[in-house]
Length: 602
Image (cartoon, rainbow, N blue to C red):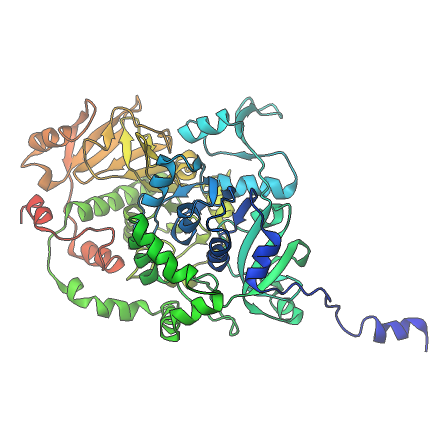
């Protein structure tokens, strides 16, 4: 037999599998590869490496490792690292609580007040941009975010952001971010082979740039340890190559209390976020003693991840699998039917959301915007209503969510922007870089943004980061949206403390903000860039003059009022029903208290 025929049988008769076996118990992996004073990156996809964070807490509590932490957010499970004093600095876009509603965290407040931790503010897009530059081995990365914001000014002082002349002669300034390389990264994946080749299902949120940039590689936790043949079968989902992996640990449900999504892969059965667990965890973080007790129960009294899953119990896990199914919202609406059936007038918050949706729909009609990226909560609900309104006119407005959700048809029962029931309705699942960096900030974007605010000033500058010494939550994707979307609508409750001559901190610059809707009326910019009151709600005053005076009293600058002040339509029964279906627990709509009823004249 000729040599080449022999080679067909011997060399090409099968595929090569690595003999490298990196499988370790998670505790051993952490003990082997993690040291004090490292720069650590929990790589946050839709799923998060929560099992690894718990094990870091077990092994390093009381040892003052002084880690520098970089990830898109510091909240939820990650807050254990702050409470235990394990991090000296966090580099994040969001530091606070995310579920059920975004808000400040006492854990963050305590750490900052004691000066035991530093906080470096960034945005949802600029974090992965810096990590991508680190992974690419280039010194910096261009961005359209940060210019004109307090975040950008802080980053300039630290030498991490600059605005430079376009080296190719356009005459424009270009923002550039300093590259960042962590020492080690942690990632939770659906499946990995013993060598570390790993698959993940989108959306990818931060994506794997931190893992690719990590100087000392990646500690992988996986729902399943599988053969390389299985990895090859789903190679289109391959994200982590074995070459960068230090260890692989089998951790079923290792993302809990976050979930893990997949679609049409029988071996990978999705599980949803454990909202009830998240609520209990958030309640525990309200004071140090209760958080200590929670950590004792769920981290320190549990020997390892297997013990943690046993403590969760199969009944709870089965429910999470059910909640990840596309149509589970039907049953949830039935559970809440009594509240949905209750007749109640529109509250100021509901009116604000509905009127914001009208304003957004009007701007889409006028300017031809094709996409919409909204923030969490009331801004997101307004976007969903605007999309519904436009669909009735055969006008397409494509919804986006910052972690990589594109073209979704929002489902009822859960207003959380990353609702698992929304994922099967998408046309594209991608990552932060694509949604914020291309569809919202790209050269051809036709994007309308919608964000909330803690404070807003007369020029539309928004603050969601800091009021005096108190940290709020940070930018998340708000700065990225306001900086680069063609236009941004802001939704904010009308209070004198929120409507200011000048905000305490510019999280999101107001240059592209053209419209603001509050719980009392609508504002639009004039030719000088000032917000002018152009519309009011019926319950704001008996007539236009009275309403204007009431609104002025709740505004911190000398508010201009349009000569053609418009009384805005009341919300329709259809709009209220749809809005309440999206948020049946009234997480963002507020409760129908007697005070609210009185405010609308009931």
